[in-house]
Length: 214
Image (cartoon, rainbow, N blue to C red; front, top):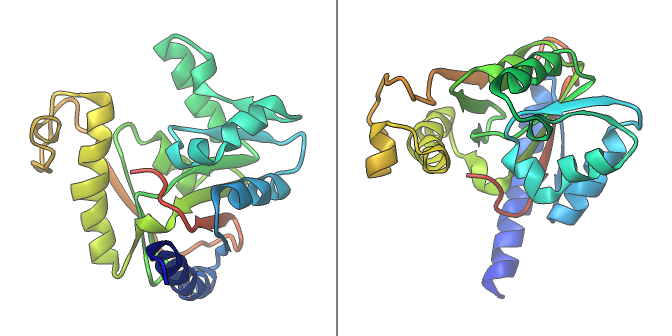
């Protein structure tokens, strides 16, 4: 059996357990083996004419979802279409009233809890409250055994790697390791654990059997 086949089986089996635990927490979830399947599924879930917003959404970008929405019959709130910080801030606020909000996950624990870390807070704010639906696109590389492992991944893997994109003046930009900083450029200002949903089905997870995001 090839390593590709081994990884495929590993992801499928973990996803089957994870989906049950996500649904136990009043969210919904599905598993797609490939990016192509994930894109098809996401477009099935978002009705044409919907207002759809997102933040950075690297995983969604990797499956081609924002690109497809921009090209389709949807009202998109895309901060990459504007130039000024003020316009980007306006879009971030409009996203809180969207029909759908697209996001990734910095980590997900096998018991169904999602961990996200944020600098400005607009992404975690939208996950918590506002948009009618939240669609999480997450590669199975984001799945950790425990919620403690998930928080650790968000702090020590996702945040330092993301900071290499932003090149802010933080310890992790220089060393690649979390310095537990509170600098002006810190992107770890909010750490949110989504452990349950009061509104059943508001958050839907598309788990993808490929590595996505950071």
